[in-house]
Image 1 (cartoon, protein in one colour):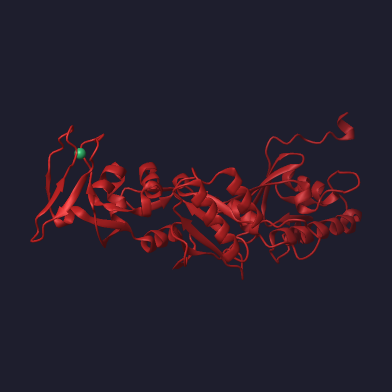
Image 2: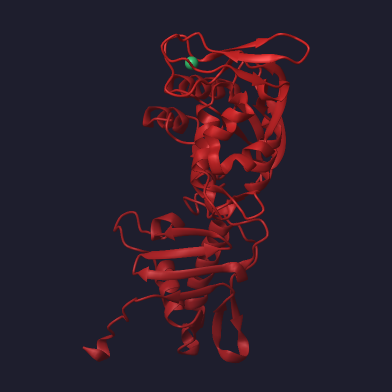
Length: 363
Ligand SMILES: [Zn+2]
């Protein structure tokens, strides 16, 4: 895969994303084949034609159409003496960006639902699709081509008025989206992403993402994730809709830090995220301790003696309840195995470099 610096910079820097083919070629260089795929001819014709750089007074050459197919580009500069050029009709056809085609392909790369539409009265911004990751929620995604900080700010202000709720804003590069504008976006729970950071091109000259769309959209989804319906857990893990407990992996990296993976989603999780921190003492609850036990014993809780059964079962039930709420998965993740006298987790759990507890017997 190749990254597309010139392609994205050109789309943002080219006024109105329109120009003659020779100028598109000059600006995009090795990325021209890709940009050609997204261009379409307009009914406009160029009025000027570049002079040998840097050009003097009277440059660049004016395009004069004498009719009957005779087109000349003539320079008015006396001191530079740029030669006149004979041109054909195809040399002066202005090509504009096919926003729908680009929008659809970007939406596909990000696995968004494609719903292309223009923005009335707002140039340089189109709606390309919706993120329907969360059931019943539709968050629109826009692509904008701001040529200045002022234009970026104008587009964002307008989107904040028009869109009721969070949205995703994509721009070719991030150079005009200054921290101040990011701040504005944050107020709407909206997020900006620069296409240059994650959209490259494959060997067949097709757009492709550098990482999975789940990873690219993780920050946005964390912002817009539905709030827990109860106060059982303060946050929710963005569990993909296809997932079950078998797809969840928890790894302890320290006593109070896990990394949790599900598909391509990865989160750093601490006791307070799962509602497993005692508010008064600031210490992890018994449920977190039980999770740590699971990590040390390959996902099982062996029953040491029959008299412990009811006590452990009660703690285990409370842990299951929190895990079900946090991951929004309905099945009990920790089942009793009668023949083996142990409880066993349906998810994978292990510890990485977690020190063993020092028991009294070892002191
Ligand atoms: Zn000239």
